[in-house]
Length: 271
Image 1 (cartoon, rainbow, N blue to C red):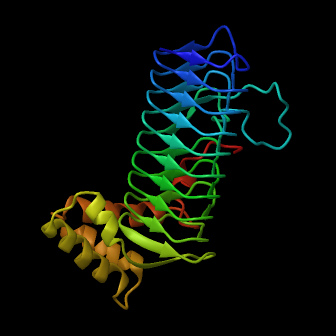
Image 2 (image 1 turned 90 degrees about the horizontal axis):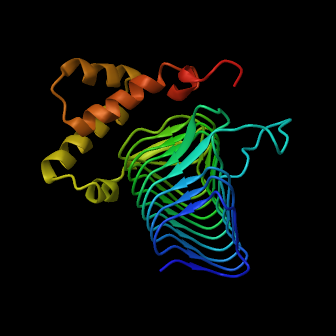
Image 3 (image 1 turned 120 degrees about the vertical axis):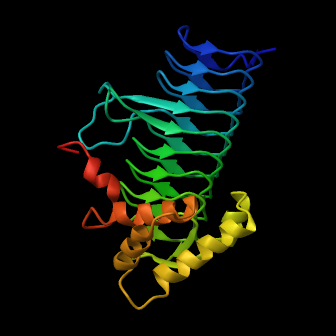
C-alpha cells in the first residue's frame, strides 16, 4: 500500500507505483515517474520528469533531478532527463543532476550505494553495483563503470571514465581515465598503484581470469617501457582474455585525448 505523509507535496502529474512511501516534507515535481516500492524518507526533493525504477531508498535531504549547475542558467532554463534504475541506496544529502541537453539524460543504473553528501553531475553515467563513498564529487560528463568503488572524498574531473571494478582510495583526485581492475590513489596526477584484487573477486572472476589480469598488469605497469607502448604491444597479440582486453581498450581510448580523457573526444561543440 502506498503511504504519503500529509506534509508531503506531490504534483498531480507525477506517477507513483505500488507500495511507495513518501515521508514528511518531501516534494515530487511534475512529470516524475516513481517505480513500485520506493521509499522517500524526510525532506527529499525529486525534480521534474525524473524517472525512478523500483525499490530505491532515498534518505533525508536528497535533492534528485533539480536544474544542473551551469554558469548563467536561470531557474526556468530547459534541461534534459535523469533516469535511475532499481534498488539503489541513496543516502543523506546526495545531489544528482539531469542532463544539460534537452535530448539527453544523466543515467544511474541499479544496485548502487551512494553515500552521504556525494554529488553526481549532469550527463554522467553510473552503471551498476558501484559504491560511491561520503562526499565524493563527480563532475559532469563522467562515466563510472560497473563495480567501481570510490572511497571517501574522491574528486573526479569532467569527462573522466573510471573502468569497471576499479578502486580509488580516499582523497584521490582523478583527472584522467582509470583502467578497469586497478587501484588508483593521489591527485594531479593520480597514480595506478596495484591491481584491485577485491574488485576481481567481487566481479566473479575465476582463478584463470584473475591470473590473466595480474599478468597483464605487470606487463603494462612494471615494464620500463612507456605504458601506451605496452598497451599497443598487448593489443597486437590478439586473443586476450576479455578482462585484459577491457584494460587495453581503456588505455588506448584514453590516449586519443591529450589529457587522457576519452569522453572529451565525444563532447559537443561549445560544451
